[in-house]
Length: 499
Image (tube, rainbow, N blue to C red; front, side, top):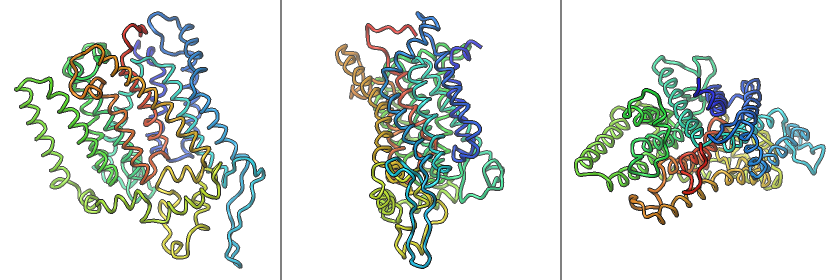
């Protein structure tokens, strides 16, 4: 009971994340609408009235601290500006374009207020509010309402939620389910609660990176990075080995799920992350290990490589083998640049006509046909055709320079504090001449800080060829990874926060 009281805010945010991920992967606005606004209000309530208290604070002091820090946070004001910019188009609807069948020209109705942001359909545009407002609220709540230990607890719960979704996906496959939740809705491919494999792939790839980083942080806390994972010693009646290795299971499940989604991008990115983290782990531990440990490490590495190779070839399902055959450098370049389809070109044309505010949420699906050539119209994409399959171009076309610019600025307010904290940690480590593996600027940090950069970078790369950021389940975890990673950065010497 004490754990639940201390971590009430972390649990409430986790409930919101679970709602996004378990309600059809966060892609069904009609199902999210009755749930998400209320969960968001509960996050606000808990953050304001029941924030985590330092050992030297009363609850009243903690509330004052949260309010004081909120007023100083640029993310608060950027969030307000972005919310206003997303709300205004709902009251400035243009309506769906109409085709004059006599002249063959499209008729776009003017917006009631030409100088304000507009949208084609207010109902469709409103779904963006279900993505961004809860995400921004959660970020502010976690940043200021949780202490470092609370951020570590939340990140671990996020990883276990991904593992649970992975298990659910495997159960559906083994039972021969033909739709999400054994329903009747038709999907070309689906996995777990996600009806689109590329979104599922992005979700599990990110969770794999975070889980692997947390596992490595636990097993090497005396060898790599600062010993900040005090939560390990707070677990009651748990053996040290079990405490150290407990994140290996979610790491393995999320990795297996990323491969099983049959998303080519997820397969490539998860394998790339595995390669990068393996090199990072081996190089770091090798420098602080005795000969016997090095032999074991080398044998383990060989076993992992063999297992992955067999899993990707001999024991791989037929669907995975078919996807692997289609992967080539030319195909990757073509998908990222948009050369293989008309979507990127059309989105760019829409952006040129709606540069400042964009055409409104989900407007691409309504406007694309009038920008397509006769040849492109003959081969129009039906399934998934309402998306550009490039998040940057779709957000630019639909939210314009101003809207997309505010989104990017919000993201940088998350990344910069982590980078600054890591730089301060590196400078302090260098000044103290602590024995740290080479290179110091990498290994003086907790592995969680490293994966909090590697995992989100992989999602950004994925977004150039698909739409991971158009799913709130991915968007929220992606953004929270930067904030929660700060829970693994120790306070500078001489600064005691009495958590």
